[in-house]
Amino acid sequence: MIYHAHTTNVIALTFVLPLKDEIFTRELWEMATECPVVFPDGVGVVGWMVPGGREIAVATSELMKQYDVAIWAHHGMFASGEDFDLTFGLMHTVEKAAEILVKQLSMCPRKLQTITAQNFRDLAVDFKVTLPEKFLYEKE
Ligand SMILES: [Zn+2]
Image (tube, rainbow, N blue to C red):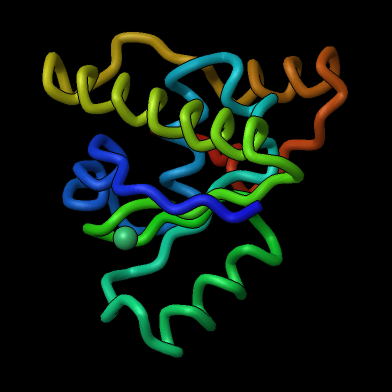
């Protein structure tokens, strides 16, 4: 199942976050503890391209070899899963995390506290998920 939607909050974030897989994944994961459990492989991001053509299809399919979620900058999101319920749930979880991030950035761009890289490693053990270290970089 491949599901495409014009997810408002994810689109908004593509104007203010660097269009990098590592940054989108980490920022979205931090917004809700369930996120790294629901999308442990992270999300991929494609910069703006003309939709409907071959170039964006190739770029998206490359990302979806690694990720179940691909974000199209200033356009929306693709999610893949085994059936519609799982795929809709996945996209809803990512979009909800994006909504929380939009609210957090609107209130105060600097977080006073968050889920840390080590917190994610501890969560991965208890929830038996593998979280790639490329998303667990240290922040200053
Ligand atoms: Zn579209």
